[in-house]
Length: 65
Image (cartoon, rainbow, N blue to C red):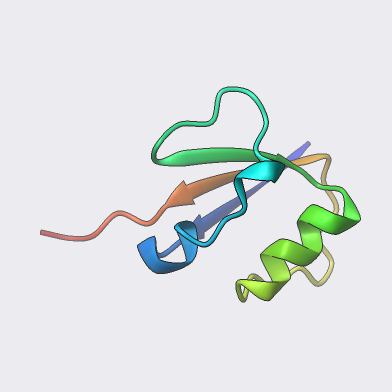
């Protein structure tokens, strides 16, 4: 089971690449849901209350044209 997170460009650019796992791209990053990675997402303002998953799919927020 995975969690999906959408971040603004500003926060997406703050993601620490040491947490990325395979298949990450320029617009989508994948991270395990270990305590260290979960805390990193909290520091970016992601509400992690009640989140239970094995890994995260983190997407860059699309801007409307």
